[in-house]
Image 1 (cartoon, rainbow, N blue to C red):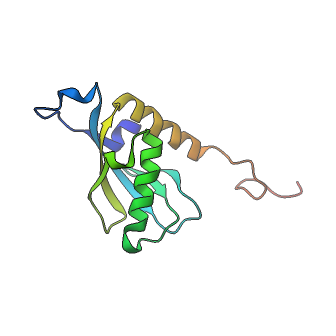
Image 2 (cartoon, one colour):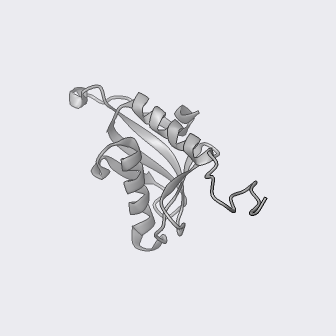
Length: 129
């Protein structure tokens, strides 16, 4: 389930003005050098994402942050890679997210990653048959 992929951080004193939004720390496995940015499903207890840029100069991290910001409907500035900057396994803090919306968005993205594409040549399909 999507809720196994992130932890909700405890509210700190002074966080009352978030309008019902929370801070989560999402576990992410980033695969750089892919053809395009996409959620590829789960990888253990992490969300598996593919991004186009190589890992040089933090470009893969920036692409992963942009993808996650779009997925969770928050500004990229609301995300911070808190561990794993030079690793494929990362922890990304997301501030100001609705936890239920995050669960739903992540679960939907994982479901879409499992759906057949319907393209010729896709696994399980034989051209001309």
